[in-house]
Length: 330
Ligand SMILES: [Zn+2]
Image (cartoon, rainbow, N blue to C red; front, side, top):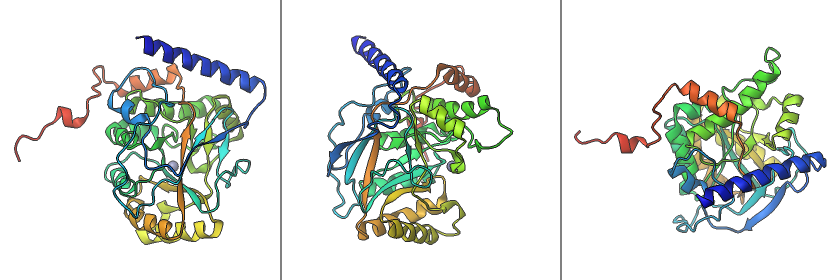
């Protein structure tokens, strides 16, 4: 109990601190700090949190437990881990945000949108595990409520998880009111929290179709949520075959020399392309950077409640499928 109280106080202090920093106008200050260098494949606190669903968020900044070293000597691995201070809503990805040029030559960040989804997301997770590397996942809220077990696997594997709205609405659509735009953002975060059984995750957000209405960019700043555009878009959702995804990413990354790469774990071709793409990145001398949040996202109670109402399940079971359904004969 004492520990839970300490966490609550820490979170309150953090929120208080954020408000003060906004008031002081220190937006974008100190957004990135180097967390570790040349680190081996390691896990985040999410691993532990995801296994034990709780009503209150756990702190993200717990020390990472030691993990078995990578078994693949040719793995892409993780070259660098950076911690992101999302105070004031910093933007990443040169397609839209040019202030924070933190990647070094031949460094890449792998990002995956629109999941979680059966088959394709687990396939992406398998490839990343084989390569002892990591990415940022931007799930769609509705998809997270359809497949919470898959999202829990993403967290358990130590990847960074953010959010990508509730229903993938284009927030530049003029038919949406300001309240509806906010609801898309906030319900997306609340849905991810629900799917993860209350475990903490990152205050990282990507707008659908990279459509950035200025007032929502400002709003995310007040919510201390980091905004992710990209440096290079794979356009994997348009690819007719896996090879097209590989060729598109390699051509663009070779031209830029580094960057945040936008892909979709939702897409079959991307899942199929990923093993070869990882080999090509390794062969090209590229190194993966992991981006972790300094503090977890704070969801809003109003939207957490809406998710519970939507679920319409008065006796929500948070037990994994494997503990409920056992094959006893086949
Ligand atoms: Zn998307």
